[in-house]
Picture 1 (spheres, one colour):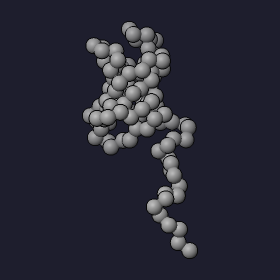
Picture 2 (cartoon, rainbow, N blue to C red; picture 1 turned 135 degrees about the horizontal axis):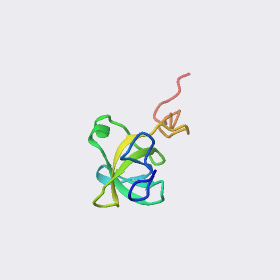
Picture 3 (tube, one colour; picture 1 turned 30 degrees about the horizontal axis):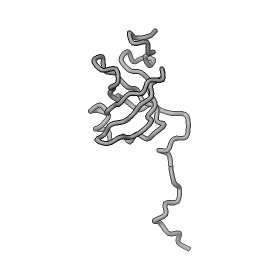
Picture 4 (cartoon, rainbow, N blue to C red; picture 1 turned 90 degrees about the horizontal axis):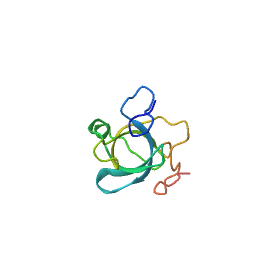
Amino acid sequence: MTTADGTSPVAGDDRGVRATVIAHLNNGMFRLQLTDGREVMAHTALDFRMAFARLLPGDQVVAEVSPFDPNKARIRRLLKSTQKSQHENPNPNPPNQRERS
């Protein structure tokens, strides 16, 4: 099943499309690449913002594209990834901590 703009919705979610975070921009905005190849500007939804979730480039998200401007979207939630993410222990030995012997 596809929506009116030709994108396929996420299973169990009739208003969202899968997207990948490309870049974190100023003022809480993100650049996303949708599954159909389009790039859109997006901001996080209020409930997602209140959860203090951090988004990094490469993260998979569910985004809701605006019906009025197809170049803008709202990030609704972060998808669980099976790949090793930058969220999981990005640097095991931070440079500011000295090893004690």
